[in-house]
Image (cartoon, rainbow, N blue to C red; front, side, top):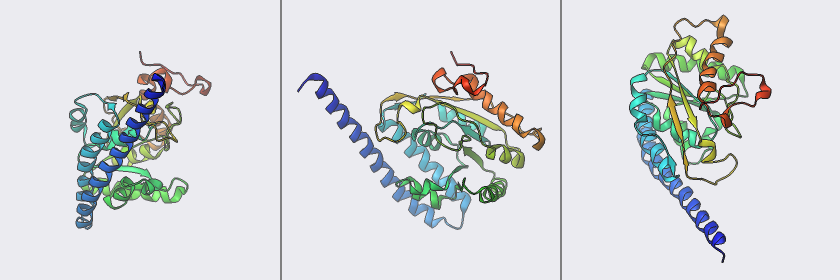
Length: 266
């Protein structure tokens, strides 16, 4: 066997070990936290916080098993910003683990309804009290957002949302949907952009190939929504997205054909 062939075999074994280990960690931790969530079914706020603890432990463990290097001290940067609407770009399944690891205690997640089909994680999400949206049904999505507003106000929660609405195939930033802005109008919570870079190289869409990658994370200063208005909603959304455009690297910016003014970081 050639050296290159041997290296490929080793890489394959390492990749399989990472994926299997990640699934085992998820399976065991989900089993424990699912029991807790069932016991706490009458108390949605407590279920959400219990699942935040699950995310803090499991998210970091999976990132480590996947060989993802992340900046130190990120959790310490997040907690002082709570409560807020945390918006982050989405280019890899790794973003989910980044999000659940970083989300401060008391942060409710917003995901598409299909999340329940994700092995282990989806089943816990379904009973956790976090929010699921049917993005194909606008009326249903709007009603879910209204319900979310009531829950957020009543329990003093924050929100984590991926405003692109779907995962980017190549890591480049997609247009933002309006859900997070409507939540901001209803709750007047500040918006905290969380910019993730390099995750698209760690776990590419449509594959189970996981690569050791340095994932960058930047928590940008909060954006006040106190003066936001419905009439200027598109402008507000564009201003939040511009924060991402100003710090994303060139390979994660939208292609210039979109007509946007793009500023690559560095």
